[in-house]
Image (tube, rainbow, N blue to C red; front, top):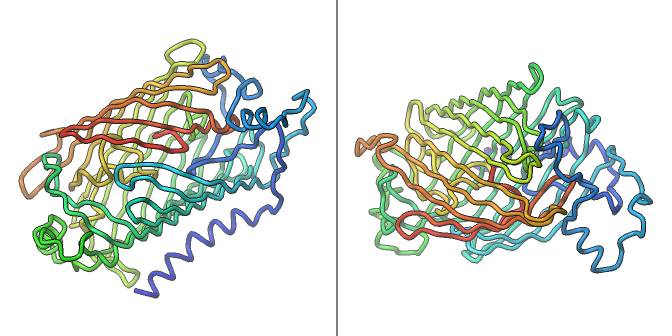
Length: 441
């Protein structure tokens, strides 16, 4: 296991090293805020704007939290036009304190280091970024994450990575949508996730990709030592029935991917589409795979303006995740809230619903409240349905709906990054406060 762990740690570090090594200069502070990227997302400037997006207030006329801070400190230049021009070729570096809250973690504090750089003309090239984050939570969870999105000149290629090293916990429930909150049994484990994908542009906005994927849940144990409910927990029952080691389980595999991406910004899109399909075969191997199984998934997102000035918009998100064949380890089964940034299923904790097949949908209304773009709000509804072959529960037999509202504060006007504060309600009394530095989707 030690050899496997070293291998999977080296892969993402080498990739981010290549990204950071292309430039060494850091951006100087200037009135024209560089696109500091939060949460691992990437900013895109290419493409022609739709009528609604075209009439949005330009960044130079917007106010973000950095502008507010400068005004409080009296450091705004008398004439914004006198500020030095922004050189997109420089590497941009920011180290920021972070905080957040989700029902599954409680309050978290930590630090995030952001590296960002354009490898081509910003008019035709998406900004590349790497984000390294460290956090600790009120529930005694520790997390080290490395996420990156790198795009080459004119977007001819791109690299995406989602890598996590966590000492964490999660409640385990039975499979399907029809499970009760009282059935959850807290489970502690060490989580290692290496999900890296390389893409090549086949034609404008259409990409084909291949990836390496490793997921391991190690040192699995009851959240409370000696918990009498542990032996009857759904994790123990599922793992025993399918022949998995209770102390740890892992999956190793590869992926083939196809994607259409016409969004004007992956961080906070005003217009465009994202549509992707993925096929992942996981295999038994010396790298750590405990079973042979196959996963397929799709992800579709759309963004449309409601008003001519683009200040009110609708965002749609539908995705499906399916075990196509074989038997997956318990924690690798499709689950709510286990997407890349853990933003699906606001109203529930991560992993609250899990099953062999999952379908998820969300609709969000987004509005800019102030002319300078500083404040905004959202209202959203979502629902999920899952299957359980053991009880013959099928997709669409039952649903877990949720909804909520949120406040937005413009954190960085160049990258459209918002500070997001959401409160959501789910069924059976489930509810939660969510703090983040990027849109849910």
